[in-house]
Length: 339
Image (cartoon, rainbow, N blue to C red; front, top):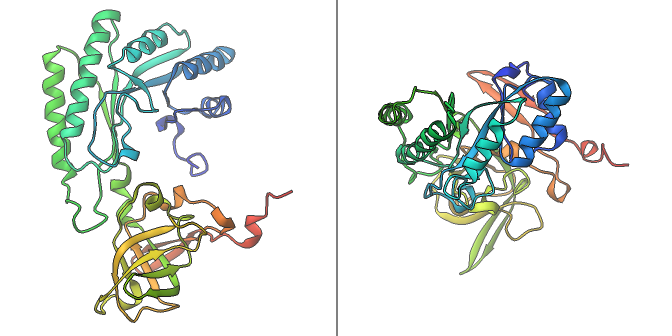
């Protein structure tokens, strides 16, 4: 995708906890700037592929600092037992660092960590920095290795619902910066290039998803359902980890919301839910529009053709201008690769 958009390949950091040989070959042959390696097998694959080509590849190692971000369990990525990276606490990080430093065709430029998503303050990053910089100092003392880049990952949160806190990202980064300088000075090490990954915080608010209501089902004294023409195929986040969203009836946004319901999809799964306990106008009916806010980050990238449903299109809006950025799939698209 980045290549087709003419993004400079040398600026790409290529992630993944299980890159195939094809993935690695493709990235190297297309000049990807840095591969963030996750494990010994990947280091071996990179070394072998680069050796055959007679080149050197810039690599960072993904480490797990053992930090609990106090967020969704499903998106906590920096704990010792995570599927990602090599744990500092167990000694695995030191082993893979030494292993990588011994490789002829790999330029170890630094370390990466990522502890989770929906982080609303600087404490998590500061805690991670303390662990990572202590590790950097130990690698310098034991192996003479000077870390050139330190990537503290991402995860700054966004407000999906009113009760989510607001976040001053600039103030948070300033706090992290002050702590980083103090830590590096205390270990008498040169300041590396610092990288942070803003993630959803730069795109989530930019998008919303519009659905059309099909069925309104009322079960007296039990529950109400509003069914839409989408669901877990285009937004699986509630099914994955009960993500909350702000949901409104878009064409009746100014009407009184006196009807509590669950907004559900059209897939044949009981867990096909967009949001629970949503307040809608009691007049909501077939053909009305339901808007799910703050969906610019993950919906399209996580979408699938589950239950053989086509993916919706994406319309970009800028002031009075609009254009189709991604065409809606057709039924013909669904069977295009069938033999």
